[in-house]
Structures are given as structure tokens and as C-alpha cells.
Image 1 (tube, rainbow, N blue to C red):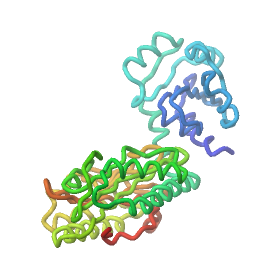
Image 2 (image 1 turned 30 degrees about the horizontal axis):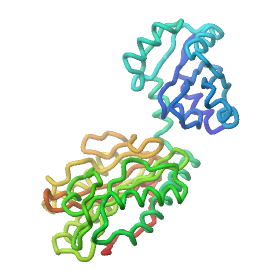
Image 3 (image 1 turned 90 degrees about the vertical axis):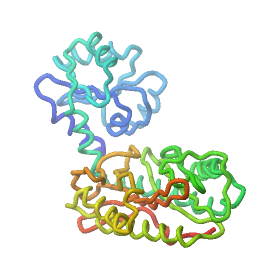
Image 4 (image 1 turned 120 degrees about the horizontal axis):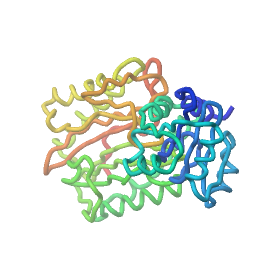
Length: 357
């Protein structure tokens, strides 16, 4: 059985009577077909599944997607209406979190069935996606290995006079040379006072001795993302810098140790946050502690002050506490971990002691 078949079946089980599901979001299509592109439609009935695609991609889809019927369309709505007639469909269920008002109006006017905007279809894919299969775990691990290798290689490149933008460009090049399809997000490579910006944008700021340098990076492999953050020092480190680094590292390790099946995302966040608050820096930790990683860089479960997500085996979650002192510097340390019954498995292999370049 294809790894994708249970995912399709999960949606089919949500259907009643003469309903069908029409899946249009990029991520859901990738999850159901294995084909990573923004074009196409997945049409699912209780007994059948179809992937509708245009001429540009028909050859690669026919060679790679074997678990559903493939239909090449010149006019997507005509092809969908033919399937509606073939299966006597009276209502088409679409993803409530992916269909815009314009798309909904378009479907309603051009398809020969009632259009039902429902959370059930989105829920069916998200419920499956949150628990990773063995293949997905291997893709996530490989994405981390690629990013980690590039990071270790680029450390030799970081020295006074190099710009943030040059470091970002070198990292992207190295990740692609190491097998990445691309970068998981706009890489964060910032130095000096800009390390106090949680999502700082690389620019022409040059590295200087005595500065921190923050790397928040990730690679994409087979559609799956990695996410890691390390903060290093260049040349030397002040007592204050080392103090803040040690607090964040303590919070990070405690947050990691809190991860196991049965705890909530709130529990993980609180464990890490309490350490930073008790050290007197709570006001300088303004974001959540973590999020899931998979086909998207940010997905469920979430580790935050408001999270009610219960961690289960084979979920992934990042642990990324930080302290950001305005106009001075910031520190963040992040790993992505796999939840296990009694704890966690980290995808990263690098030590976390402060590196001074």
C-alpha cells in the first residue's frame, strides 16, 4: 500500500452520501500526492481519488503518482464537472482555510454541485500531518543534516569584515550543494545589535570582533523542512554576553527535557520560560518556545503560553527560547525534536556550548 493511501482514506471517511472533497491547497496536495507543485486539484469520493493536472506536469505526475487516477485537463472546471456527473455528486467539500472568497465564488458559479466550505477537509489532513511517519522522520533528519553540514562549513567563513548578507548567501549555496531543494525560509544571519531582533533580516552590516552572530537556518529535503538556531561569538565574549548565553542554554535544555508524550505545549513553554523569568529577563523573551515542523516550517503542535496541544509520539516540535536586549544583543538556541513515549530524540548532533570564532 502506498504511504499516501491512508491519507486519502482519512478524507474519504469524512464524506457522506454523494459528497466529494476538492483539495486545492499546495501543502495538502503535496501531502496527498507526493507531487510538490502549486498546480492541480485532488478530487476524492468515498471510493475513488483523482489527481487533475495540466499538460506541463503530466509526464512527471504519471511517472511518480501511482496511487490515484491521473487526469490531464485543458479546462479544470470541465474536468471536475465530468467527475461530478460520473459519481453523481451533489455537494463538493472544500478546505475552509485554503479557499478564498473569490475562489469560492468561482467554484459556486462554475461547478455543477453545491460548494460546502468546511473545516472537515482541512482537519482530515492536519490530523494526519501532525503525526510523522518513518519516511517523514527520515526526510526531516536529512534536512537537518544538510543544514548542519552547511552551518559547520560556514563557521570558517565568519570573520570580521564579512557581511550578514554574504553569510546568508554562502549558507544557501552550501545547503544546495549538500542536497537541499532550497532553504526552509529566509535565512536569519545577523550580527551585533541586530541579534536583538528575533527575526532580523541580513543586510550589509559587517561582522566585528566582540559581537554575537545568530544563525536561524533550515533546509528543505523531499519537501520537508529543518529548523535550527545557534548563536556564536566572534573574537571575544563579554561577561554579560556569556551570562545571557548560559541562561538561554539552561532554558533550552530544560525545555527539551520537558518534551515527552502526554505533556502539553504549554508545559514545554512554561518550563523554558520560567528559567528566563526567574533570572530576571522574562520581559525580553517575547515569543513562543516552539512549533511543529514538517511540510511547513510552522505547523502544529505549538509550544506557547496559550497552547493546549498535547504532545504525542512522532510529533515534532522546536525548542527555541531566547533573550533579546534592545540595542545591545540577543541569544537564541533552537533544536527540532521528535516526541517519543518517554522523552524526545533530537535531529541535531552539534554541541551547544558557546563557540568563539
